[in-house]
Length: 107
Image 1 (tube, rainbow, N blue to C red):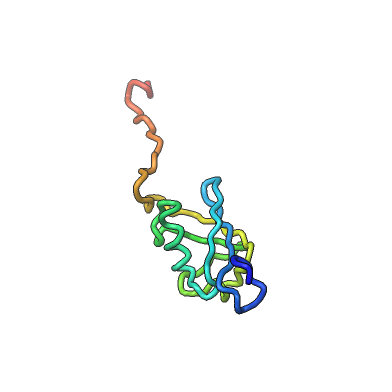
Image 2: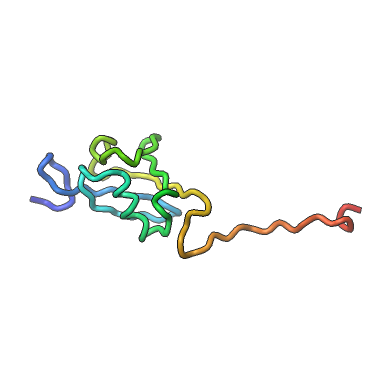
């Protein structure tokens, strides 16, 4: 039996390609795992908390409670990860500062 392929229901894992911030992550996961479990696997790789992750596949938002199989994600699928601003851990997000306008500038 080949690891990481999904020829039938008996295979234990599938490979999913997750894109985030110009990087790609190959994730091996069971088709019976939930989207929430997938988000937990992505947290240490991306430093984005699961509650701040939005996973999108073929234009559809993947729901936490659904399984990978019910979400129609199969072996080799590409998923895009979008992070909610402020829910990164570890590395702070850099927000550009806009200088305040003063009376001197306006005159």
